[in-house]
Every structure is written in structure tokens, then in C-alpha cells.
Image 1 (cartoon, rainbow, N blue to C red):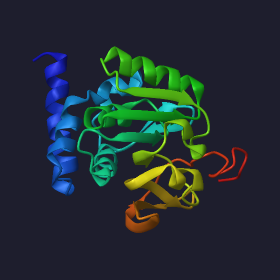
Image 2 (cartoon, helix red, strand yellow):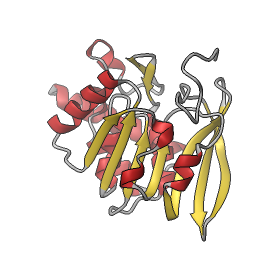
Image 3 (cartoon, rainbow, N blue to C red):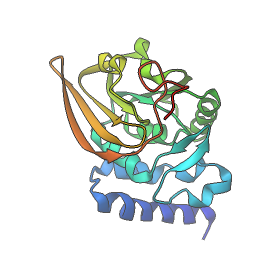
Image 4 (tube, rainbow, N blue to C red):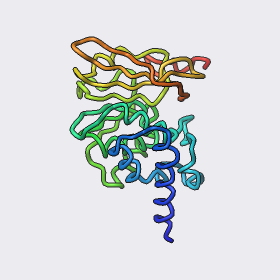
Length: 221
């Protein structure tokens, strides 16, 4: 068995045991998770843990999210293939890769310039072309590319940033962890006739969303 065959076997096991068995049913999401080589998005020294059922450190105090959380949040966006999606918190680029498999255009913002550069290089090397990444304050969104059919925030915020609500298209969906730094509620916001309908989907724990409309960089978390 080659190394790639071994990783493919681990991905199939991850999808079956960690994702499908926990209730993620969208076949497009499951297929995307199978196609994206998660082990290439974690530091080489912990690559052997790439398919573990947990988040993993990627540097700068950030993490690559637990596989199930990636699948769950992606499923909540209900992507069909033509959407323009904004991701806040690029990290290693793994979630962006999954979104590139499922959406028409992906725009991703990362606070840490080094992570942004490395993620872009990874995605380009894997052949993705339907994305743009920039470094900056994700809580401000990407107004010149708005509106977005889907917005995903991969860090915990004390509230839903107003700029992201303003940049959500009519009929669009925004998924964001909202709460304290120790625990958040995964929140789904849908925009319908200029009203924002909010539902709480379940508890989660993410690193803090730092920015003008999130946590302050020097705050005591």
C-alpha cells in the first residue's frame, strides 16, 4: 500500500465514523471531504495525526478545525456549486479547499500574513483556482466582493459582526460561532427580505475571532 493509499483509507474512515455517523448527510460535502487531502494542511511533524477526531495546531496560536466541525459548518451553508462564499479565518487553507470544491468563488481572509501566504501556496499547488486570499481583519468582511451567498466564520466571536450581516446576500446563509472565548454556540443566520433569521445549531469551541468587531488583540481571554 502506498502512502497516498493509506491516507485515502484514513479519509474514508474519517468520513464514515466521524462525519456521516454523526449526522452529516449532504453527499456533496462528504465527497468534497474525501477529495481534499487533509494531511497536506497540517504541519509535517504532526501529519500522522491529520485524520484524528480533533483540531490540531498550525502555528500563530491557530488550529485546523476538527473534521466533523468542518463538515457540519459546510453542510449548513447548503452550497450547490455556483455561490460566492466568504470565509473568515483561512488558517492552513483546509476549509477553503473544501469550499472550493463546493462553491463557484471563494474569498478568504486570514489575520496572520504568514498563514495567508502559506495557505495560498498550498491551494495553488493542489490546483485550486476559484479562490482569493488576503491578510487582514476578517470582521470587516470583503465589501468590494460582496454580496456573498454564504459566509463562514471559523473563529469564535462575542456577537455577529455587523459588516458581515451587511455583506450577506438576500437568501444567503452565515455560519458563525458566537459566545464567550471558552464556549460558543454555532449560529446560523439567514437573510430573507432584509430580515435576519437566527437559529442556534449546537455548542462548539473555537479560537477567538480578533478584529474591530470581534475580540481585541490585547484582550484577556
